[in-house]
Amino acid sequence: MTNVTELIADSTWAILTYEEAWQTYINSYVIAKNGAYILIDSHLRKHRPYFQQALVEIGVKSEEIAYVYFTHRHADHIGNSDLFPSRHNWIHLEDFYELDDFSQTFFGHTFTGSGGVLPMLQFRHLPFHTEGSVAFFDPDTKVCFVGDHLHFAKTPWEKLVDYGSLQREACRQFVKRCVKEEPKVAEGLAEGLEILLGWPIEYLATGHGPILQGEIAPFFEELISLVRKA
Image (cartoon, rainbow, N blue to C red; front, side):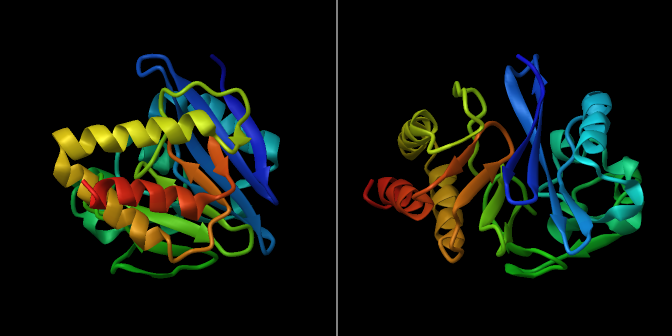
């Protein structure tokens, strides 16, 4: 398996690094907007060489990076936060509290609450995965960056941006298992999806694996119904 850098929507790129130990891809994203760049997540520390190479290939100059937003505090998402000045790094306050004292120094901004508008993007706090997990939404491209609330870690794929029939079916099966074995996880997942239905999402960009395009709301509604009807 190889690392991937690809344009996924207008002025929006995905950077995927392959983690052999996990047999899965780890995603970050770059958005060119209003003459500046926004970064979302930053991979594991060990993936720094490719992450930096990908930024160069996209054309990102350090002085043009305006904001670096993190979907949650796990190491595969904040592993290269130290590459950027702390004043550019943003994380939800609930996850900031969970970081050790040294890691907190990498983040110059926190945000809080259930949702709102940040510079360039909107956010929603999600009741699942970590205390401060969030999704971001770009109203211009209709891309939702959902972190690990939903992801397609080990589901095979050939096309990075796709309807994703295999991925959708894998999610259905995951939700069905959770309903039986981890009902609290299933409920948190459903609550988060209900929150995300408030956005007119056309692309679902997750923390691991391919990006789904098309019929996102009906897909969310289907997953929610699997939980609510159980």
